[in-house]
Structure formats: C-alpha cells, structure tokens
Image 1 (cartoon, rainbow, N blue to C red):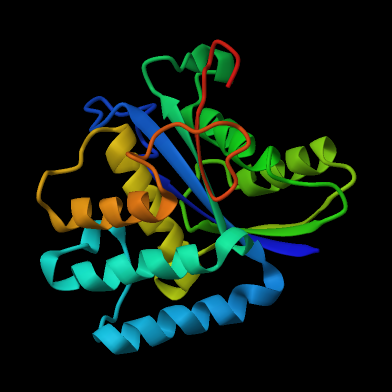
Image 2 (cartoon, helix red, strand yellow):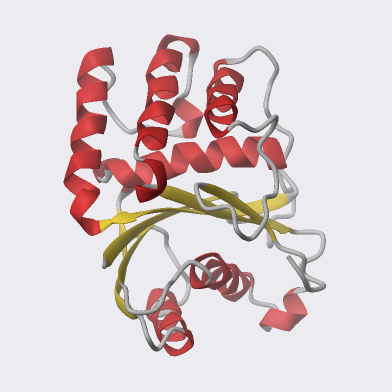
Length: 233
C-alpha cells in the first residue's frame, strides 16, 4: 500500500534555548493511506464551511468562538478509525546529552524524528513523508533522514521526504492540532476551563482514555512515545 505521513513539531528549540518554555520536545505524525487524502481534505473543507472557519487551523488558534469547530475536527479524525492514525514522540530535554550528537541540537532533533517514523514503517509499503516547513542550518537534513529510513527499512519504499508550508496543507494543520493536544498534557500546560481543555477532553473521551499520556508500543490510533533515553520504551 501507499501511505502519506504528515509531520509537525512543538517547541523544536528546547535543546538549545536558554529560556526553555517546557520540558518535552514533541514531534508528531499523522498517517493515512494515500488514496484517502482527498476524502480527508474534503471532510475538513466541509467542516470549515459549516462553521465559517477559514485560515490556518492551529492548536494556538483554539478559542471559545472556535471550540465547536475544533471539537468536530477531533470527530473527523476519529471517524476514519485505523485508516487515520497519529503518533508522537516526547523527548525530555533534561535527559538529552548533546555531546552524543556532536553538540549539534539540530542533528539531535532529526535523530528523534527518525525514532518517531522508523517504528511505524512496515515492510512492502511505500511512504511519502511531508514535514512542516522549517529552516535548517544543514540543508541536507531531510535527505539524510530519508537515507537513514531507507537503510533501516530495506523492504519498504521511502519514496520522498519533503517540507511544505503548513498554511497550505490541511493535514499538516490537523497534525498540529493533535500534537498540541498531546503536548499540553505531557508538558502540563493545559489551562482549566479553557476551550483548549474542552478540545482535549473531547479527544480523550473519543479515545476512551482518562487522560492523554504515554502509551504502549502497540497502541495504534493515538500513540504517544515518551522515549527513555536510558533505554526501553
């Protein structure tokens, strides 16, 4: 089968910031069969029309006036069942030893990107991976990521990895919203009684979870990988 993967990150500067805003770097990925892309985009476009919500969908844009729209966006994600899945990785900046990455925070970031993607790539499938547009000091980062994924998944095809501007890609925006929900729980930044909390609770109810948090390796719909840098899951 052919799959598409849409990726976004939250707080990517945590490894190098002198004033970190949170503890966990988060990178997220939305996975779906390529043949379902147009249906997913059409469902999101119809939801926009119903609520008269335009512009970029983002976690940071959730407000009381748009709460119903974002709650129903969660419902769209859930309605695809296992045909649309989400996986994110949470990296504790306090445990990261940049000396192991040549004191290069950007290199470390893309190593964790690899860990996010590698474990969900299955033999005999083809994958196209789309990342939110990000300025890298080393312009070869995405090519290097594709090469590493290729050599560790020789029975699968990594057809392409490219960056796209998220304001133009609805599925990157959906990934941003889902990642924001996960990050708000992992980083404990969710305000009580806010529209964002209502959206997160809608997701937790639909997932039948008391609260979003680290999951087992086998969780397939909404997988949260809180990496243990000392080893293990």
